[in-house]
Length: 308
Image 1 (spheres, helix red, strand yellow):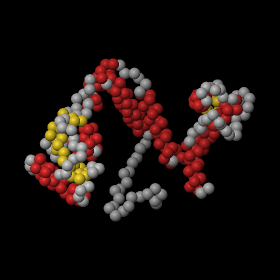
Image 2 (tube, one colour):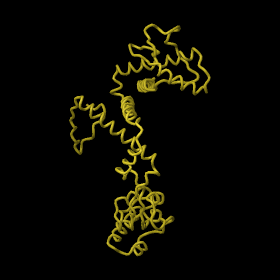
Image 3 (cartoon, rainbow, N blue to C red):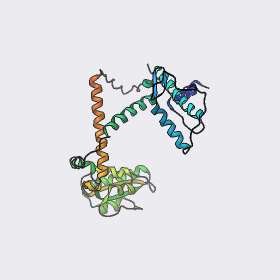
Image 4 (cartoon, one colour):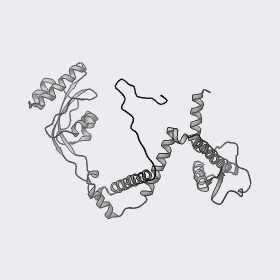
């Protein structure tokens, strides 16, 4: 086995966690008989002074029982489950000794994600009162706006009937002439190609623009005021030029229609605030010094990991 393959396998074993299944195998690390005197109530093992709570074992046992559709585990299988918990704790302790929690990206992300989830979960256990949700819906109305509708005039230049550069040039010229106030029909006749699936007339949701012309076209309309003309937008079959004729602003959905959504958003925001407060406390309690690295010179490639 090569050193890279061995390292990959070692990391996979360390980070895989407890593997539970109906067919468990392994060499038993836990002796038979009643619990040793050194293992207190509510604990299933003590590994180098670290207690493994019975709750951890019960979680794994419940998962295996679910796989077995309720068929009880035999004594040997229960011991192997406990072995796996001991194995995991031994590997975890060794990994921490080796500094993998700090230097292994996967381990770092897992630890940070777990702590964030814990902080947010603690904050999201409170059930908000109805008046709290209504006030949140009113104060944060922009969070609950329905998508606006737009009326759009679009012309299209195909790349199937002419070279890419010429198609772009014609689309750019069309945009320039429309901004100059030329009659759209004349510009379209002079420079555009027939559209296989033209946009529906009247005011339509931005989602409809996205479905017909693609996400870039929909995004191009976001910053336009009525009367504005987009730059040429590349789509699957060519370039489009969009002219925004009118726009309806999004309206706030009534509280009664979206109460569950308001509750979910309130809990999410509460979790974010709790995390921000928790990080502020950690910063205040700790010592943090930073130095922003210099901007690389134009002819200097960015440093790569392991570069002196």
